[in-house]
Every structure is written in structure tokens, then in C-alpha cells.
Image 1 (tube, rainbow over the protein chains, first blue to last red):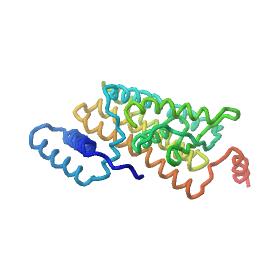
Image 2 (image 1 turned 180 degrees about the horizontal axis):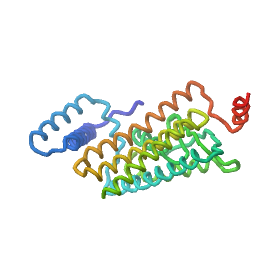
Image 3 (image 1 turned 60 degrees about the vertical axis):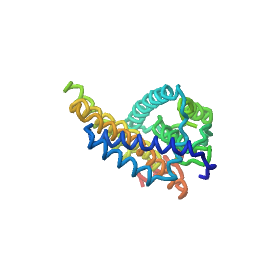
Image 4 (image 1 turned 90 degrees about the vertical axis):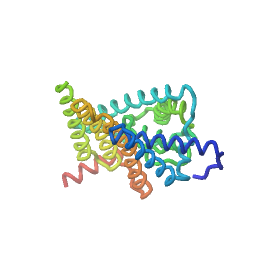
Length: 174
Length: 106
């Protein structure tokens, strides 16, 4: 996906973010906090930033604001709830002898602009009760439903699901 | 603590089992992916939580593993589904159920 050229400041911010994340990941995996480990983490983080290069642009989707962490928590809450409900729903279907299924494929639109935001939304939809993201074409998602009750307004139902996850995501992603 | 940890490990095993059962019972590949992804993701989380309660010193590593599973599992599923969709695999419909039954009895 082609994006317009971005400023030096934004690029530096993305590099710093990637570096910080890499160092944090290294330290978490190493599980010790002495200065040798810190040095190794710094070298590894620097290498990651160097190797990633242009690919770091995906981090440009993050929206920095004071309320962003709050929205992140809200998203995690909504997502965790959806994941548990998805599993109970799936367990019920798999265990019932009649295998209640009525699959359909529906297209929905998203307001998220950035690749990172769309990636997270597509992921969340896949782990939400009864839905699977099949394809992403620009701002249109193709979603496979396990069970569409006949007579239900499927497009509206899908849009509703997307909204509940999209709302908190919009708080910290573009 | 021991009992809670064991409970989570058992829960993880149950969800993973349901995922496997879903793979066997579902009629087409899209539904199989759905059953597989969701059950295995939560199942793995339950495992990690159980292990975390048993060995609290490992929490950092377990958190990293959970993060990677959370990011990569749905991507893999969506990618497989997309490839199948582009290859022209039609999602199974309810009308197909009759045909399946006829095939079974033939």
C-alpha cells in the first residue's frame, strides 16, 4: 500500500517506538535485568530498527493522545469478552448433535484508515463469536458467518459487531 | 493456588479438545477454521495462565507468548481463508446438508 512521504520527526518517533518495544521484549524474554542484558537488548533493538527500515511505517497508524491508553484498555476488555463468548458459542455448536450452522459471507466497511488499525480489527473479528475475516479489500472486509438466522438483517448485525470493536480501536489507531 | 492453576490447565485442555472436535465435525473449511482459531487461542491462554499460576517467575515469558499467539493466530487463519476464497472455494450452505446426508447413505 502506497502512503505519502512522512516527516523526519514521525520517522524518528516510529524508530524509537520500535526500539523501545524490541528492548522491552528482549528483557521480558531474558527475565533478568542486569546491565549486560540491557546492553544486549539495546544492540538487538538497534538491529531490529536497522533491518526493518521502511517497514516501520506500519507504526504510523498509532494515534498518540492522553486518552489512548484508556481506549487500549477498553479495547482489550471488549476483545476479551468477545473471545470468551466466541468460545462458549463455538463449544455449544460443536457439542450439539444437530450442528446448528447457517453460513454466509457478508461485506462490511470500516472507518479505520491505517494498515495497523485494519489488521487489528480484522484479527479481532476473526476471534469474535461466529465470524471470520476472509478478505480485506481497502476499507471493505469480507466476513464469513457461521450462523445467520434467516430473516435477520445480517448487514446491520455485522456492522454492529464491527462497531463495538472499532470504537475503542479508533481511540488509539488511525 | 495449586487447584486454581490445575483448573485453568484443565480448561485449556477442554477448549483445545473442543477445537479439535470442531475440526472433525464442521462441514467445510471456513467453519473448521472458525472452530480451530477461537478454541485454540483461548485454550492456549488458559494453559499459559495455569502455568503462570504454578510458576509465577515465568510471567514475563508467558506474557510474550500470549502476545505472539494473539497476533499471529488470527492472521494465519484469515490468510488461509483468503487463499481459499480467492481460489474459489464456495462456503458450505444449509442446502448442502441434504446432499451430504445423501452421500453418506449412498
